[in-house]
Image (cartoon, rainbow, N blue to C red; front, side, top):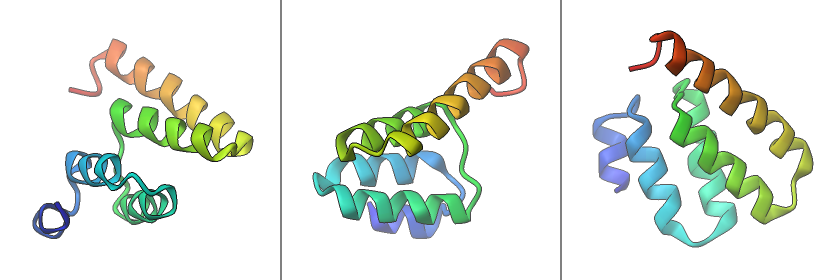
Length: 82
């Protein structure tokens, strides 16, 4: 899965798949930080970041990620996010 990130560094799927399969919160957070460096955006990505923040008890990140989810849903509804 890390190879997928190397080959397609701007693909949100590679980051989400790797982070979801780590089962280690700190390593998953590092994968998401790498994704941030590539400006990765998708509703699934933000949802999973919210879930990670929830598992870590990080209410500030939960609030931030919740706003991102709403923004993504608006993009989808307006046809800007295919």
